[in-house]
Structure formats: C-alpha cells, structure tokens
Image 1 (tube, rainbow, N blue to C red):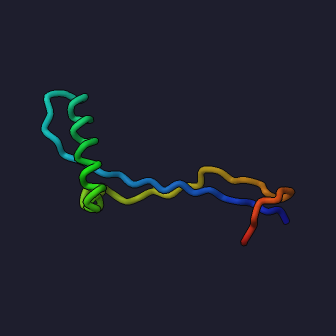
Image 2 (image 1 turned 45 degrees about the vertical axis):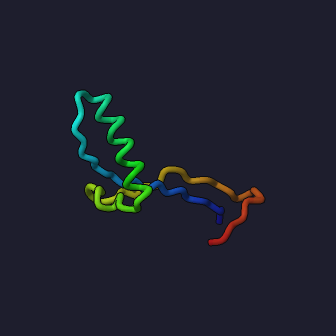
Image 3 (image 1 turned 90 degrees about the vertical axis):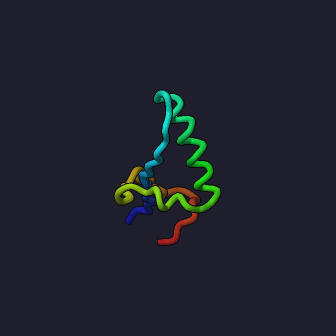
Length: 70
C-alpha cells in the first residue's frame, strides 16, 4: 500500500449589487461592499448557488517523513 494526501478545493459564489458608471467602478464598489459585509459577518446573505468541492491534487507521500494519519 502507498500513502497519499488528497487536496480538496471548495469554492463558493457570491453576488454583490452596485450602481456604477462603468465596469471598473462597479468592481471597485463591489470590492468595498464585500469588505464591509465580511467585516460585519453578513456575507452569507450574498451567497449564490451551492458550493463546489473538487479534488485538486493528489500527493504520494509513501517514502517521505510527512506526518500521516489515515
């Protein structure tokens, strides 16, 4: 048997509504609003859709000193 570490990446999508003159300003305003809602802990209200989980990397640690706990 070999020892493997499997890395997962989970992503979530959020939508922020802003009024802006152009796309660049919209990004700037959305960034500011995002920082505010994260600071307030209310970002979950802006979540859009389901989170996605995928296996991104598999590491073979068989012959290493890497801590292993199956």
